[in-house]
Length: 484
Image (cartoon, rainbow, N blue to C red; front, side, top):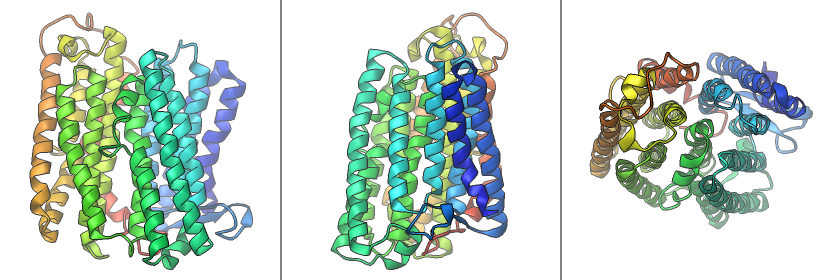
C-alpha cells in the first residue's frame, strides 16, 4: 500500500505533460488531472488513518540516499485540503478560462503547481523540500502573471524576487544542516539535531526564508498586490494553499526536527509578529476599496492567527495538551483555506459580471447573484470565527490554551481581530444587499458558482461538525517527537 504515495505526485505531473502536448484538450485534461490525484489522496488518507504513517523509498534506495516519501496525519490533512480545493477551483477555472487565449498555459502550470504542492507535503528530506518549494514558488509566480495587466506583472515580479530570496535563505540553512549532520533525511535528523550554533543558525535561516514565503508581517507586502491582481482561480490557490506550504514546513521544523532547539523567546517573537499581522491586516481589509484586495489583506490577518499559536505550542510539553493546540492550528488553517478559496472564486464571479470589484459599487449583487452572495456570507462566517464553522472551534481551543499556558496577553488581539473581521465582512455584505444595478440583471445559477459554495460549506459546516477527525489525525506522526 505504500506505493500509493507516488500517485498524488505522479498523476498531475503526467497530465501536465498531456496538457502541454494537446493544448486544445487542456480543459478536460486539466480537470481530470486534478481529480485523479484527489482519488489518490483519499486512498492515502484512509490508509494513514487505518494503519498509521506510510513511507516509500523511490527506486529502492535507503532513506538519506534517495527520495523518500512519507505520509502522516499532518501531511494527509494538508493533502486533503490541497486536493479538494484544487478540484473545486479546477471546475471553476474550466469555465473561467474556457475561451482564454492562454488556457493551455494555465493548465500546464496549474498541474505543475499541484505536483509541487503534493510533493512538498509528502517529501521526507530537506533537499527535496527545497526543490518542491522552489517549483511551487516559480509556478505560482507565472500563474499570477496570467492576468496580463501591468499591476499583475509588477506584483508578480515582486513576488518572484521575494520568493527567490526566501528560497535562497532556506537553502543556506539546509546546507548548514548537511555540513553539520551529514544527512538531510528528516527522520534521521529528528534524533540527531541538538541545541548548538549549527542548529541555531540553520533554524534561523530556514525559518526566515519560510516567513518570507508565508508573508508574515512585516514581510507581507508582496502578498496583497499579488493575490489581488491575479486571475480569480489563481488568487484562490495562492491564498488558500501556497502560503500554507511554508507554514507546514515551519511546523515540521519547529515541532519535529528542532523541537529541542526552539526557545520560548523565539516563539514569542513570531507570535508578536503574528499578532501585529492580525490587527494590521484586518484594519487594512476594512479600509480596502476593492473586493479582492480586501480578501488579500484578510489573508495577512488570518495567517497572523496561525503564527500566534507558536508561543503556545512552545510552552506546552509533548502530550495531549500540545496535540490539542496543534490540532486547533491545523483546523484553523484548513478552515481558512476552504473559506478564502470560496471567497476569491465568488469575487471572480462578481468581477466577470460587473467588470470591476469596487466594493462601494456592488449594490444589487445579492439580488442578481444570490448564490454568490450566499457564498460570501458563508465564507465570512468562517473568516470571522462564528459557529458552527471550524474556525470557531479552533479559536475556542486557542482561548483554552491561552489560559492553560498563562499567556492571556494574546486575548485582546483575538478579540480585536474578530471584531475587525466582522466589520469588513458586514461592510461588504451591506453593499451587496443594498439596492442597485452594479452587476446587471438576475441570472440562473452558473456552473462556476457551485464549486465556490461547496468550498464555503466545507469551511462553515463540514469542518465544524467533523472537526474531531482533525484532532484524531494530527498525533499520527512519521517523525521523531511525534509531531505534537
